[in-house]
Image (tube, rainbow, N blue to C red; front, side, top):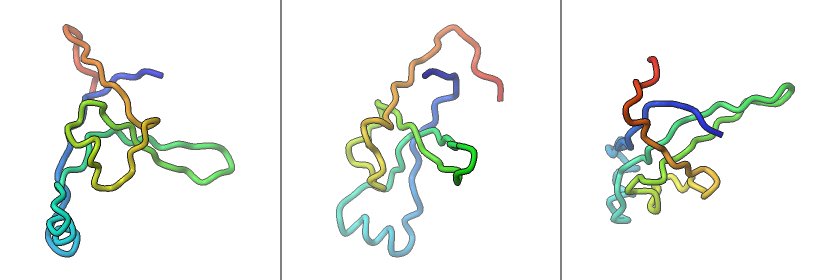
Length: 87
């Protein structure tokens, strides 16, 4: 499967409060992986959401939410010389 999008960056989570304390106690980073969210629909069933993570994210092996599986890792390819997708 292929599609065009703007590659998202990873971003930090809020670390005020107990989540931040837990991450600091474990010596872990506070970065959420770069990803694109996808809603998944099938008639008669509840909608689900999944994500495709970027294979070159520097925090891929240390995901703080433990949600990454190999099947959810995609390779983002640059489209050099082509205009960006419309907003």
